[in-house]
Amino acid sequence: MNHLKINQFKCFVDADININQLTVMAGANGNGKSTTIQALLYFRRTIEHCGDWINGEYQLNKVNGLNVQLNGAYCLALGNSSFVLNRNAELNEIRLGLFNEKEEVTVTYEVDNRDAKLYLTPKALDKTESANFPIFKQEFYYLNAERIGPRVSQQLQFFDYPNAGWQGETTAQLLGLENGYYKIENERRFGETQSNYLIDQVNHWLDFLMKGVKIRVETSPNTLTAQVLIENQFTVSDPTLSTNLGFGISYILPIIATGLTAKKGCYFIVENPEAHLHPSAQSRIGRFLAMVASSGVNVIIETHSDHLVNGIQIGVAEKKIDNDAVTINFFNHNEGSSQPDVQPIKIKEKGELTDWPKGFFDQTQIDYSHLIRLKKNV
Image 1 (cartoon, rainbow, N blue to C red):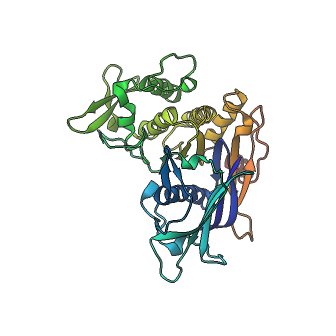
Image 2 (image 1 turned 90 degrees about the vertical axis):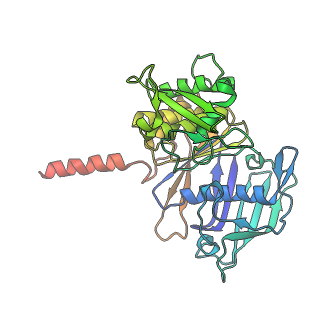
Image 3 (image 1 turned 120 degrees about the vertical axis):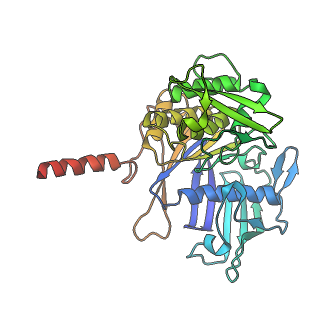
């Protein structure tokens, strides 16, 4: 189990957040889920900007005086330095990092509180001799909550490794790699299907999530564009543009494409994978992401969907992923506390949760109870 260190950053005074093979961030709005994702993304950007490129990976062995911007990379929009320093901070500094029982890498940033800056300045590094965390890999996959909606086409872009972009802007290009003959690993194939080709497996998983939906990709090197065409039960053999079929497919495609192609041992962070999906598809995308994590990708999810969590529980009960590989971090606010409370919840072998704290996906029961009381008063 790894832990994300967040010290004096935004709403956190000092917090250590559990990061498992499959990590779920859940809880009410404004309780630190997004801050946790932002802390990890900003730490990654620090490594990219200030680290060295050695033997195909980033290495951070010293601070080199370079400033790290607060806005732009990974869709971060943190504002200026005065916005990110915790209001109860005793020192004008922020610490972010990763650690476990044997290893640690933590950066301390200087914050100039007198003159708000659009960056933070790393001033110190604490690092064990061996620090082998996924964040140092070149491949780092992130999908923002605000993904690209339906488009007639997408521009072809250079990327260092196959990925769908931060907002799904290169999904069509990813799906069209090697003219449709890009291969994925066997353990990510759907069910008993045999094809290893990415486009075939995307269609198998799409059909699992949204019955009858199928895609194909057309790439035009001359116009530097790639286009996703979609079929469903009403357009069979006559594919239509994605702009004619709403947001659900466009929002889910980058998740499926990334989940099937992400390199083992790397991070895949996805915000609100349930967006624009029917509850049945929300549950099934939870099962899909459990499969991706089980295949060796470190998956981190921010969600407001109990259906998605249910899907992960089913994945555990069906032995698609080991229950010890899953952690649900429940973010909550306790009266009088100086920072959000983060309670780790585990899943038992049969899919049951070890805890069900107040406020954790209990709104359905609360609403039903309220309706019953209203009915009795009629």
